[in-house]
Length: 273
Image 1 (cartoon, one colour):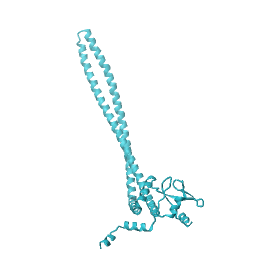
Image 2: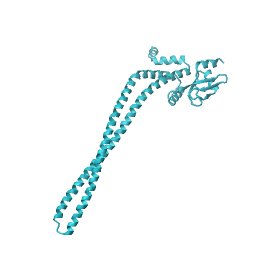
Image 3: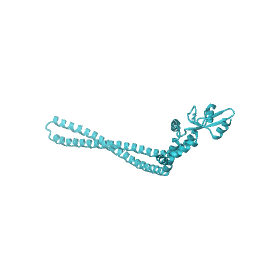
Image 4: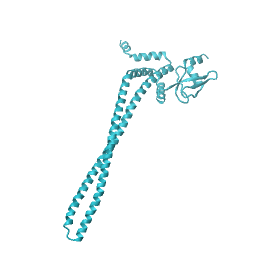
C-alpha cells in the first residue's frame, strides 16, 4: 500500500521526465532542452533590456545627485566666505571711523601722518575685500544657476525613469506566466539528461548566449565535407560518423566547442550507408 501511495504521489514533472527519458535519445533530449532554453533566454532578454533601462536611469540620477550635492557644498562655502568678507569689511569700516576721530584729535604732525597712513591702508584693504566679496557673490549666483539646471535635469530624468519602470512592470506582467511555464519545461527537460551532458550544455549556453548547439552542415556527402553551422569550421567525418552510430554520445565542434547535431534527413541517409 505504501509503495502504491508513493507512486500516486509522484509529480507530473517526474512522470513527464520518465516518459521523455524512455522515448528520446540523448541528442533528442538535448535538442528539446536547446529549444526550450532558447525561448526562455529570449523572454529573459526582453526583461533584461527593460531592467537595464531602469538601471541606466538610476545611474544617471545618482550621478546628477552627486553632482548637485557637490555644487551645493561649493555654494554654501562661497556664501560663508562672502559673509566672512562682509564682516571683515565692516570691521575695517568701523576702524576707519575711529581713526578719523583720532585724526581730528591728533596733537602732532607725526601722529597725524601715522593715523592717515593707517586709514589709507585700511581703505586699500577694504577695496580688496569688497572685490573678493563681489567675486564670491557672483560665484554663488553662478552655482545657484547650475544647481537649478541640475534640478531640471533631475526632474526630467526622474520622468524617464518612471516611464522605464512602468515599461518593465508591464513587460513582467505580460510574460511572467509564460516565463514560469518555460522555466518548468526547462527544468523537466534538463532533469532527464545525464549530469555531465547537462553541465556541458549549460557552459556552452552561457558562453554563447543560448546557442549551446550547432547543426552539422552537409557541404558534399560524396567527399565527406561537413562544417559547423555556428563557426563554419570543417567537421571531421569521424565526428559525423559518431553521431550516426550512437544516440547517447555528445560530440563537440573542435573549434567553438558547441554540441553538434545532425538533421534527421542527413542522419538517416548516412545511417543507410
